[in-house]
Image (cartoon, rainbow over all chains, first blue to last red):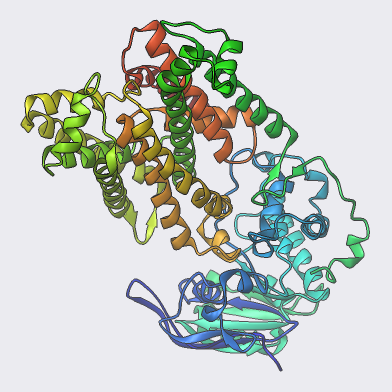
Length: 265
Length: 370
């Protein structure tokens, strides 16, 4: 199993607060890797390290055989794209203009806006289904549409690796599924996708490679069907549950027991 | 990615609703181009009118003739020697203030996050005052006080003082506004307003402490005036601006990315901290150069970017648009101060006009949030 992107023994910390002391994780090429774990387990922090937003204090994030910190930022940005959790659209920007901003890593002093940029921008909008919204103002869009536009911004970067930081947060369930389907399409078409998700059932359904984290360490990783068991959920989340096959996809589905587990039967 | 979307990409049609000039990779709408050209034309027209008005009136045609024809005699002296420096200063300084305002309002994501509101111009004034009153650069000032109204900064030492004062203020305001490694726009504005108040007090103290003639000159200069601008001072300031404009042009694409948030900008390959530092330094330098030569001229930096946004309707705050509106505002304000108010310093005009603008801004915002 080859991995273009991997964390090797990284120590991750925010201003003295250590999130992970010795974390290693390889992203299998061509996979749809989903990272799950309880709050503050370090999954988003790991994604920040993958996307160069956080520099490891020890160890290294390795991209194509070299430490990612050693790349020129634009070069790294042509290989790894990110859908950030918090991004803001400037007031009065149209969908087309915003998506075009994703072309920044492909532009330079000499090489400015080109036909390739135009094509990549349009392709990204077509892939995310926002092409018809091209001339609309981003401010006027619904939450689901806006998130699609941000995905298009990341797609316009044309990177073989795409990182998604809790991409479905704040969306209603139909938009969540719609967006995850879109990521699955991108994955099928060849992009290696790494997503941090909260919903275990979504994770099990869409991941080809499921990574479960707790307390800054990887507990287990592998195909969802092998990894996701009631015992694991109990160990990692402290949640009593049963795991049954998803009636639609057959993937593991976590059904919490909640207060039912305490009720005498 | 081209491969990933190939099935859908076959439907790709290249549309040209948006003009993308090969300048800074910025997509430009037709509206922005037309309005930009109109603004530039308005600046030019107003400049010609300004060159022709005064005690020795000239028609626009005579102004152009005087400027182009070396044998024009007295008219040429009036236009090139007497009036040109002031008009040029108004254009260049207005543009510098407008661009600087756009930089800081973009960085702070706040229409109040302007260098004149958050203390940078006041700090630059403090720096220049320190050089004049304490630093013992009396020779530069003696020549300044010897000039017509005795109110001018100018010179390398005061420019350096203003620059240092502006940068130190910016540094202090940024440091105080920083919470857990991130600078929040609103916090920056509040801290900046506090810094402005403190620096105002310091400036008053410096003026009270100084020798009478120095204090008087400093006070008049502090109102912000273009009345004493001659070719000497101007060459200095223009030289500095000529260096700063390309620097700003280099940083402009990164500024556009920073509008998307630090995470997105960084993911797109911007060195966020470095770019922001560069933008702050260039933005402060633009304000400081202006302050050093004409005193603090308020509200142009505050109003120009927002007016430009209303006119251009583009995404974010346009640097070029803001510079053009700034130039137009300052030339107009200077004409008002000279012709209608018999020589009241232009800084007073912009403060009054800006006060009205600020009131409108707050009312509109209040209505929108209400």
